[in-house]
Amino acid sequence: MSHYQRIACLSTESAETLYALGAEQFIAGISGFTVRPPRAREEKPKISGFSSSRIERILAVKPDLAIGFCNLQADICRDLAHAGVEVHLFNQRSIDGILRMVAVLASMVQCEEAGSQLVAQLQAQVDWVRTRAAQWTRRPVIYFEEWNEPLMSGIGWAAEAIGIAGGVDAFPELSGYHSAKERIIADPMDVVRRAPDIIIGSWCGKKFQPDSLRLRAGWDTIPALQNNMVFEIKSPDILSPGPSVITHGMRQVSDMVARWQEQQAA
Image (cartoon, rainbow, N blue to C red; front, side, top):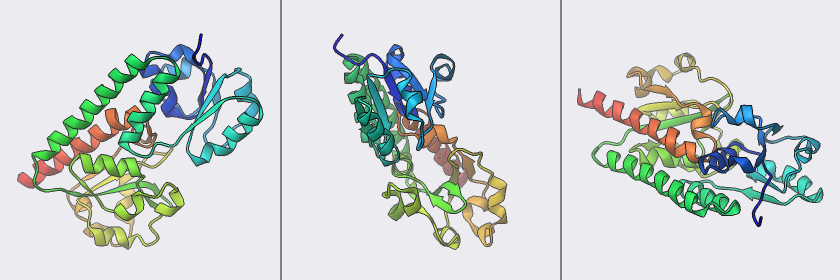
């Protein structure tokens, strides 16, 4: 056959997408961080971490293609290329980028029709969230916290989801940076000064602890804390740039904004 048969998915979103396309039979191995769909962890060997991996574990599943994501996997992809494996390094950083990734990945396994259908379904969900937001005239300021030590604001596609859902990103000047280090908020009082109406915690790889926010100096004056508008979105739902950002993360943000709107109207 003319398409790839044994794909090593080095990050979660490629495995999620191939399952959503009904093309999971072409997955030779997955990242250990893969959680969606749940059966992937039972059906596929775990062959890599994220920013570090042992090449021999990946080569052991005899991939004819390895799919990675972003600069953090560039070295892994380089080593695989040296070992003779074809690689494709995605770098999607926006909602449109996620949709493009789905379409490209579908073409790699000759599932173009399924890809078109999946893109259309995802676009319809984005449009629904945007239409829902259009009914509201007030837009809450939303602080998205990706990490707590040090404080780190949300990545680009999370900020974009906030905007589509009817919110205003509290740190728009940071969301455009790809590197986590460039999204560090050096002074926690900067969050206080921006007075977010909603706080979303999505600590990458660990459970968000909302009560800890009240222990931060000066934070008791933040509207989100005063009005109990502090929420968690699990990191697999919004921090991996695949379909789940739209199907799970964006929808949760939309529901949070709806709750805030109801509170304002009460």
